[in-house]
Amino acid sequence: MPPETFPPLLLALLIDARFGYPDWIFRKIGHPVTWTGALIGFADRHLNKENAPYLSRKLAGVLTIMCVTAAASATGFLIQMAAGKLPFGWVLTAIAASTLFAGRSLYTHVRDVAAALEEGGLAAGRRAVSRIVGRDTETLDAHGVARAAIESLAENASDGVAAPVVWFVLLGLPGLAAYKAINTADSMIGHRTPRYEAFGWASARLDDLVNLPASRLTAALFALAALFQNASPGAALTAVIRDARQHRSPNAGWPEAAMAGALGLRLAGPRSYGGVYVLDAYMGNGRTNASAADIRRALALAALAWLIMFAAIGVCVYVTARA
Image 1: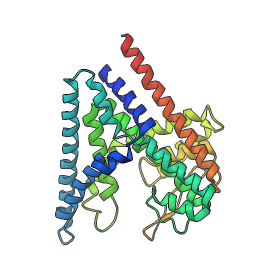
Image 2 (image 1 turned 90 degrees about the vertical axis):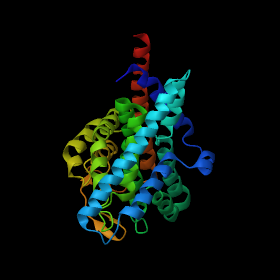
Image 3 (image 1 turned 45 degrees about the horizontal axis):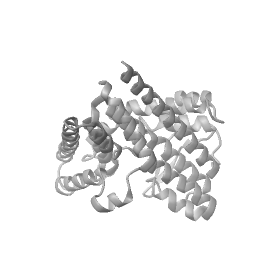
Image 4 (image 1 turned 60 degrees about the horizontal axis):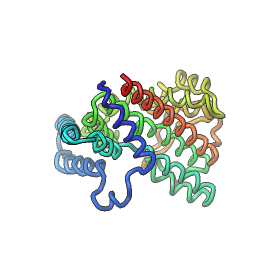
């Protein structure tokens, strides 16, 4: 990886941590994810024909993810090339990259669930958590709301922060943009439903592949962060080794198990999506009676894990500057 990768990466993470993606910009021009989503939606409407043969829909899905990924990667490449020709162009690269991280947004939304439970009770907690999870929330009790928020934090700490870091380090802005496009496609069409089982197959499998390194990295960061908090790094590693591979996702189980073990909780397990009851393994063997206080403990653990990652990138910046 070229040494010039690290300064824009560190700045991008700092921009996201401090400012996120401002609402006024979103209202004016949208967000790269919404632009990608519009392209995916167009393909879904025009290529995913319900009366078409299974194989045809599957091939249409392959074509869709190839085109969406290529468009995103090409855009990232053009921005990176243009920035490279400008004085201090790496700052432009950092600003562009910062739009594709989701650390601040994730932290804020999960914190809102804790605040809703504390201040507004169960009904407010259900409304808040419904904004960040896909499961049915109407029947969750307060403990279920808290567990759902913590699971979302753990999984999206990988998808929204660690994975973008990994792909920026490996392939620069084109790699980061391509990753974000794949992740967006998976969230939109990578579902095991009659409509998307064939059309979304390629997006779901590709998303599983590109998230492999980040999910493991996030689990390691959670265990490391637990060393410096009122948490258990040993239990985090034990839960990962014992439970992570039992999760129905090849990636989500790693950070969820690490978070569960570190905090002494029991996460994941059976839940309902669109009225369909989904059986899944439990991550961790601790308490199921999670609370708003546990959400805040999870937020502190995630924030410290990100700080450790920031520090590691900062060391890389310093070393490359001295070389």
